[in-house]
Amino acid sequence: MIEEREYKKSWFGHPSGLSTLFFTELWERFSYYGMRGLLVLFMVDAVEKGGMGLSDRTASSIYGLYTAFVYLAALPGGWIADRLIGAQRAVWIGGLIIAAGHFTLAIPSTKAFFLGLILVVIGTGFLKPNISSIVGQLYPEGGAIRDAGFTIFYMGINIGAFLGPLICSYLGEQVNWHLGFGAAGIGMLFGVAQYKFSAVRLGDAGLHAFKSQEQLNAVGFDKAWYLVIAGFIGVGTMVILGLCELITFDALALAQNTTYVIVGIAFAFFIYVFAFGNLTPDERSRTLVIVILFVTSAVFWSGFEQAGSSLNLFADRYTDRMLFSFEVPAGWFQSLNPFYIVVLAPIFAAAWVKLARRQLDPSMPAKFALGLIILGLGFLIMVAAAKLVVAGNQAAPYWLILTYLLHTMGELCLSPVGLSSVTKLAPKRFVGQMMGIWFLATSLGNLIAGLLAGRFNPETLNEMPGLFMQIVVISVGSGVLLLLFVKPIKKLIGADS
Image (cartoon, rainbow, N blue to C red; front, side, top):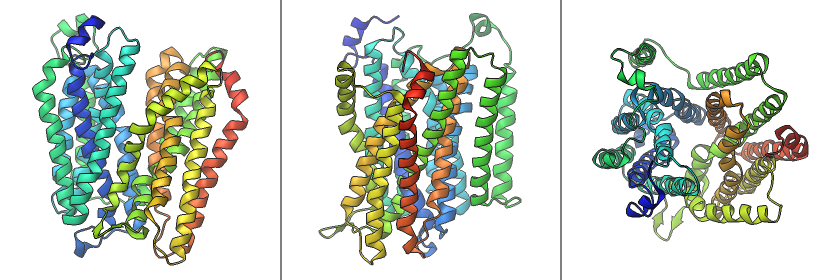
């Protein structure tokens, strides 16, 4: 075990391996959010301008499917690392696949576009869950210094998310779409290279799969590989058939059907846990709270993830982006959220601590409710902005700037407590599965976000204020409903609420 005093000889008082993971995640988020800022804009742009010429509804459905599968892929990616190859190898493999995906997107071809998206999804599934796992393993004794390490790591995430859209959106929108995608790939290559050359700093953290010493010493082929190989063969077959146009996919129908599948999986899982999980009365009550949080989380992300779709299109089409003689790329607005997080996260953390000292800290369900209400208030601003557009005006940038500020405040109320709540509430024997279900809620929210964004039709502008108002009603209504039931939910949680 590393002694805390040894950290002082390392990276700002932390294990030197934290610097490796910090910059790897920084560049991975640079590539992810850089490409995300371009994705819908590229798909709806006219073919003669270098885009794909897709309708808003189709492009938003593809966007929803892509972001949803990124989260779904974390489940098999984490399992493969835990069972077979270890987190360190998973991060390395994932980074290479992500880079390959972005460079494939840089090829001006429809087939290359869809292949590139699939590669980015697979690579992110390998990298995203496992790099966080390694961070935790750098601090075997836990404690406050471990929390501080994750805070530093979180800053790396948001620095990358801030820089990615600034560079990739400028190149993509002002020069060439595929150059923007290529820039995202170059960023990921930087991350992969520094990870490879500095991986020695990680030591044994995440080096091996979680196996017993007998399994590590045994010689043989882990039968779990059969499942992995079968999975990749299945995915590969579907990709080849699709690229050869032997089968076709309707993005909207696929998004709708995937939504039903995810809801069905969650429903079946919770039914199984309640019916056959042998839960104690306390475990049953707390699991019911997780069901409530699952629904509210999906509602929140279905609104929040309008950022990359409907709000991105609003910035592109209806916002006055001229700054003197320079036209600000629409994707630059995507950098507002990570900027606000870096600025506001310490303020929110300090505020919760001060409120707790005075016995005024909002309970977990109350924070969820506040997050939903603040999210809805952000869309209320967009209702006013949309009315300006319907009247024939361009919206000023501050409408989106204020909207993203409120959305970030809502995120800071809800997101940080989500994962922590699940680990506290889940029955010990179901913690891993409950974490998977939590990612499923985020995936579901992303899918719904894409479907909602597809309803914004540029040919029926008069409907835009009403569509934004529907999101306001759903978000605020869900938050108020949750507030009304805070006391009963706290009773279900028990002493830790």
